[in-house]
Length: 348
Image (cartoon, rainbow, N blue to C red; front, top):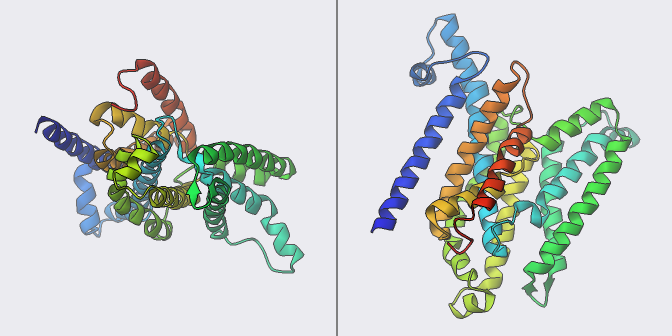
């Protein structure tokens, strides 16, 4: 009862944190809007020009940006929790299944070679903007599928082989991306740099509508994997004897991570440390039970990414800092502190 009460308090605190961060994100910016006015402006904009301007800023710029940040952050954090449970290692990261590497290489290819390919085919340019996120999403899925095929033999997927193949794939895609950077011009180099560091600056209702069908079903599905991941901590053979369909669990976890991270990278670029730090920190607070860890990771991941976005908008205002820089500057020291504190291990 005490543990259940404590979990309830933690979930209530995380929910309040999400609400507070969302209000902060919508209200903070070049045009500051007090929280007391936000709901009133969303409900009905006044004929007053200032109120109409504020309502336009909220509805067309900040609200879709906040919602996109919540979804992407939740998807990355949940993917990290899934990977750490699947690899039975609190240092595992969603990048291990190759999604970020494949998506980054596909995006770099489109940025550097896309217009040239169109010209060679005699088609008018420039390449449509939608080609970049679509290509990144497909590239992430293709990389994950390739890793899965490499690691699967006779219907059994070797987690260790997938880990090693993921490291090799990361090195290969890094080298190929480096070649594209070498061949890029100044404009393409700026686009590559901004993409590789991540940003929510291009958020729109269209992007929210395109991202939601990929990430929201993942967030709804992952709690059903909690019991299987708990058993998998004991080992694959033990989980099998407890009645867990281990191979099906692996396939489901890898697919969900590929979809969530692929959609996140396609919408906001490559953002690090969210999937690594959030699940690791939550284990120290609520324990290793994935039935609680996965939904808690969704809440905290969304809140932290939106908070990082607010910081990215304010630190160098009126310019905007890439959000990946903020998450790395904050996430790396926090992760080192979590490692050095050593209060509890992966098994709680």
